Length: 441
Ligand code: BGC
Image (cartoon, rainbow, N blue to C red; front, side):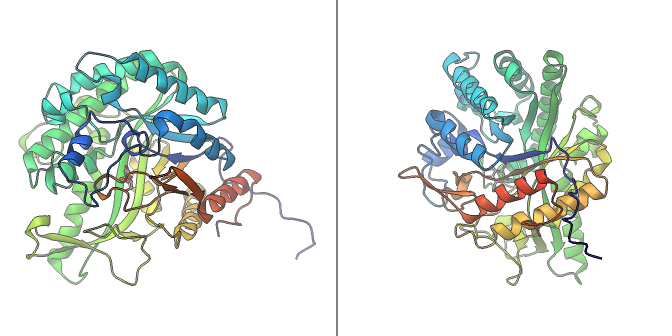
């Protein structure tokens, strides 16, 4: 019976839960002309024809956006380091670039924001790409050396590290679908070799970081997609869906969990025992659900097609392909899938392309519901990072897809908060006050 007293606050989210936003160097900094994405852009491969330009101008003014993040109540921010700025030529370290990253990390601490630093978020220096990128065996040692330099220069300012962002996306889009540089299609064996080298480079970085920082928290960010068969009554679509699900969602993760070599190298007796268990947490980037089906008229996408039924909630579509169904329940499928690691879980990215902010407020509220369920089920969830604070340069879609809590006009650098910014701020406030629902329901 209601006795008029206000309900007792229920603290579901741990007090040190990381309420964050995520970003990556090439997408926000500006001034990156020396990596393979700058070349890809010069070659006219950005579908919108856009230029990254100043991006969000973080190289000069990140602090202004850090202020905005602080105003929203955010206590963690994920950013990446641009290798091509730090090591512009092989073996030459740029003290100015490292100095700027020091300033940025200090600025976050001054605002009570915990930095989560990603070492590799899709971009490679041109000199490294010229050697074959991660297809080349020496990539492992070159990445280890880069990590060592980063630790020596910035290690006192950060203890939460993400080695690689989405190795499965890097490989699938770069070596199967040709959507990302180096633009290869259907290269099954090369893709497996690249995955293998990424696993080895990750393990080398994991050990390097731990050798220099005893309290380091090191993991990687795994992209996860919920796949459903396009025609559930078709045996071939069901088979394809299961195949794509295992190959995409478990690529990389499975090697870290079990020490098995990536498919199909494992079928030839190869193993990767040295990478087993090289993580302190599992980072999950989750956005959408897609239907997978065979489509013989689609050689460009290797005879399968990814679609979204029209009646499902969706953000804005990509220029050539749909971005995916906005399906917040998938957060739980993702977290459960990686529960076998028995490690803390961080949602390192979640969001939706939605210029008009039609469904983002709903998505944020639904994501919170799913996280509360996970915590109640005993999943060790430690943080949530929304992608992204402001609109930024969305890879081969350019400025076409807008993910920001804050709208950005790249030509003037003017910013305007979308309603979602306040929704997220309220969710964070309520979680701290112990409210069990509220904005999020
Ligand atoms: C990537 C981000 C990207 C985001 C939105 C993730 O796959 O890590 O760089 O901007 O998705 O598409």
